Image (tube, rainbow, N blue to C red; front, side, top):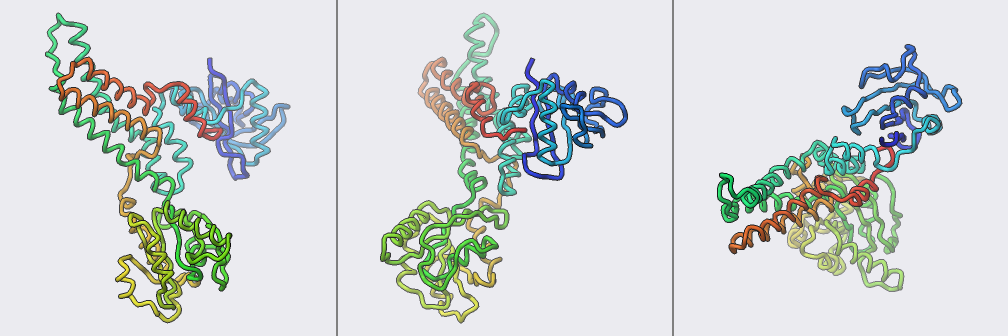
Length: 456
């Protein structure tokens, strides 16, 4: 019999509502001891998933709060066990006292992710769905939340199930012929399954190809703001963030180090990096700042090159443009649009980069800049329904599964014996099973749920 566990499911900060979650064979009995419905019944008497109003009682029998309680009997619950949720006021003291009362009646503190881990172990969700729970909690963009919600609904498993079944059918046919030679079973030919194996390989490759997009959806786009000194890079950073993060002065070289902040623009997460101005450095600190600028440019997914539109282009402007790798998208922000335009549009067109005019001090041109930055990544406009592999563990297992199928195709085409080919198919099946949790090792499961917070 597993322990009965409890934890705060809504975090430890001050909030209007706080939720205590309890799960295990003794969950309802424990709730009977700390919750008194005003109608004179107990949580044991309540209909499943029906709220009761009543008093929350401390370990000493004193009133803690007036709150609500809902019971969900297993297996029809999140964890597959009897569960109870107490919805009370969100004071950390109230929540702590509620837990202390439960602990006095034999309930123990839940470990990080233990509720979802029990849901996985009790067959309420597979491993891809369990991992989607923490992805949904940690989502920083609408796209990341939408993708995680789709995976929680089972999108990855739905795509993998026919792949797994196809490989399993091949092995089942092979072993049936070997184990039951006297039965009337269709003759087995690995070459006859080549078309199936190639289809499986294409499916795995298609799933794996989405992983590159996950870095943008989850981690955001590293966006380096670069240019020569005093073009308004820090002012542009402040404009994009909506508050004064970087110090801005009229003196060139104010920014000596990189400053990194996140901004959500048009549903796209940008990891903005304000850099030191690119010029011939005169002292050690400035040289280090310029070196960090080049490092930021080398790892950027987008570079916003800031020009001072009120002055003619200089050699330092062209040097800054040449410092950007050719495979990195570049957007030129022509700053100080409130002043007379000295830099002409035809000069900018000759540079071969997209550009827009802005005024970082007034915010003029912000919408155009935001649109241009988002348009640099058209793949983000493709809606996701949970079909993007955002998890590195899943991507690694998918890669191994694809490699196993590819080896099986080569072996079958080379007329290897079926037992040799079946070994590669078995390795592919095992890798797929690791993704959903069918064949995953206990230590891997434990490591996965270490990412979770307590109460989930």
